[in-house]
Every structure is written in C-alpha cells, then in structure tokens.
Length: 244
Image (cartoon, rainbow, N blue to C red; front, side):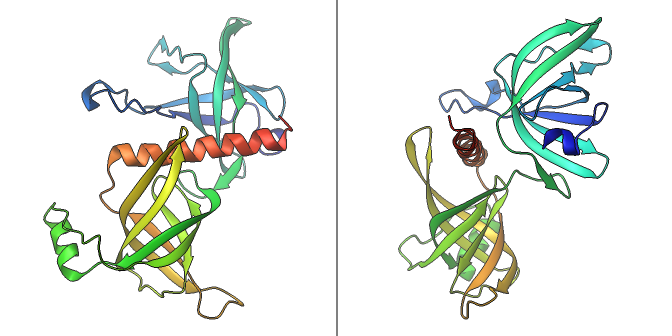
C-alpha cells in the first residue's frame, strides 16, 4: 500500500509523538517540533527510508525507537501515518533514517489530528448559559450533577470527536463530553467541553443524529493522553492484522 501512494523523492514532515511523563514539569518537556525531509527509499509496505532531516547545515539525529507522525506530500494528496525509527546509517555518503510503520497509511485533506475509528461510550449534554459564560472568563463552573444523555463516539482525535446520539444539538452549541479511556493500562476519565461543528440526521436511523465536535480549551496533558491512546490502539490493530 505504501508504494502505491508514496514515491521516492516525495516531501515528508515528521512530528514527534510525545510520550507522557506527567511527573515532569512543563518547562522541561520537549516540544513537538516538525522536521521536513524527503523519501529516500521504500523497502516494503512496513518499512521506509528517509533522508535524515537537517536544520541549516546540521544533521538532526532523531533517536532510535523514537515515534513520529509522518505526513507525506504525495503526487495525489497528503497521506499520514505513525512510524518508529529503527535505525540510522550512511548509504553512499547519504545519511538515512530507517522507519517501521506503526499505523496504516491514511489520506487526509489538510493538516489535522490523526482520527481513530472506534465505538466508545460517552455521555453528553448542552452547557447552560452561565457555564458558557464562566468559560469565557477563564473559569470552570461546570455543574457535574446535571443529567447526561448516552452517546457513542465513532471516531476520536486530539482535536475533537464524532459521535451519534438521539439528541439533536444545534451547530455552534457548546456541550459537555464525558468518556473514559485506558492509557498505558490506566483507566482515565475525561470531562471535556466541545463546540458542535455539525449535526446531521443519520440515514435510515430515525431520531439518531451524528455530531462533529471540536474541543474547547482542552488541557495540553489531556490532549496528549488522547493522542497516545489513539496511537496505542492503532498499533494494537496493526499487530492483529499482521497476526502478531
């Protein structure tokens, strides 16, 4: 599949998949910097070689076992996956990174967070006017005791989610999204505010609506936990496909 869409010489951007270390102060955490380089060779659908990225005239020695989100600028669009550096070496006086793909290649239309298809239980409700006003003033006065309606997340990313529900939220409304994820074998609860980007009836399912939601003022650590959950689940799925 990789060689079907990506060619030698295609531009590619790498962005570190930042592993969480919640005991480390924010000031000492590495930024998720974007590096630009090119495809050097395609070894197989599971392995690719990239030119080692450079800044000015300095080689950037990305660490072996480091995991990166890759965005390929292919001839017919942009493609995205996650890969791990498995080796660094020199070939014909060219410095090369060898990477193993950890997720399937996916096409997308613009730079956005990686979206993971799923079926996760969620509870939601529309925010009250006073709750929205508190957020506008950088305060969090959400009322957790108010009743929630059952929903199901059908895909999730670090930037938002898509879910189905029997509630028809209006576009632009602010809602509370409560759900649970297991990150590194640790159950974690999320109570996040989102803005409804769209709300449409589900075909052949009367009374059911599909909503696209963008997170609002989500904490950086929580966003990174969600991203890590997605990459972990994608890796598990890929191993299942390979029979490992």
